[in-house]
Image 1 (cartoon, rainbow, N blue to C red):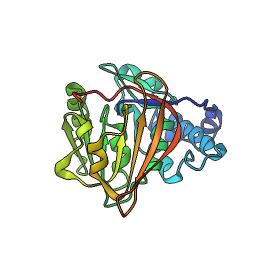
Image 2 (image 1 turned 45 degrees about the horizontal axis):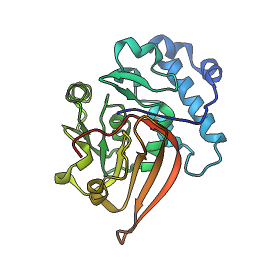
Image 3 (image 1 turned 90 degrees about the horizontal axis):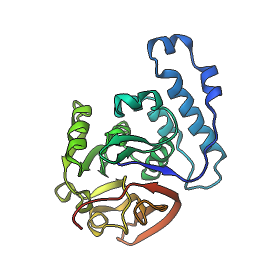
Amino acid sequence: MRGGSSIAGIGQYLLLAWLVCSPGVHAQDPYAAPRSALIAELRAQGDTDSGSFTRIDRDVLAVMGRVPRHAYVPAAERDYAYENRPLGIGYGQTISQPYVVALMTTLAQPRAGQKVLEVGTGSGYQAAVLAEFGVQVYTIEIVAPLATQARERLRGQRNITTRTGDGYYGWKEQAPFDAIVVTAAASSIPPPLLAQLKPGGRMVIPVGSSFFTQTLLLVQKDAGGRVRTRQVLPVRFVPLTGEH
C-alpha cells in the first residue's frame, strides 16, 4: 500500500488491550499484545465515530487481528508496526495508518468470490487484508523494487495476483471488478478505473492535491452504470504517480 493517514485525531486505548491479552499468547507471539491493543483502539474509534461512512466493520477488525502487520514493514520499523500511524517502507512510500486500512476495507465491502483491484501494492499489507475475505485480489505497484518485495511477501497466497505497472490504467484484462481500492492520491477519479468498475461496484480512492490534505471518496456505480460519490473524511496519501 502506498500509504495514508486520517487527519482526525484518534484516541489511545492501548492499556485496555494490554490488560486483557493472555500472557501465554504473548509468550508465543511477541506481537500478540500490541496487535490486540491496536484492534482495541480501532474498535473504540469505530464505536465512538458517529459518521455512518466512517464506522469500522467488526469483520474487518477480526481480519486485521489475524494479519501480521509487522511482516509487511521493514525490519527497522517492526517495533512500531502496531502503532496507529503510517510507517515508511522505502522509496518515498508508506504503509497506511491502520485506521485508514480498516476504513477503506469497510467501505469496499469485500465478499467471498468477488474480484478486487488494488492500485498501489506498496508493502502488500492491504492486499493481504483483502484476501482474507476470500476475494481474488489483483494488485498493481508502479515502484518496481516495492512490487518485487511485495510479490515475495505474498508468495503462496493463491488469491492474490501482483503486477508491476501504472495502476492509473487499471488491469483491463481482468476487469470488471466488484471493488477497487486506490492507496495513492489522484487529482481526480481516473476514467480507466471507473470504466473497469462493475455496475453495483464500489471504489475507495483519495482525491486531491499531492502532499496536501485530500478527501477519501466512496464511488458507487449503480446497476444502470450511473455514478455517485460520497466524501468520507480528510486524509493524506502520497500521490498516484505515472505518465498520465
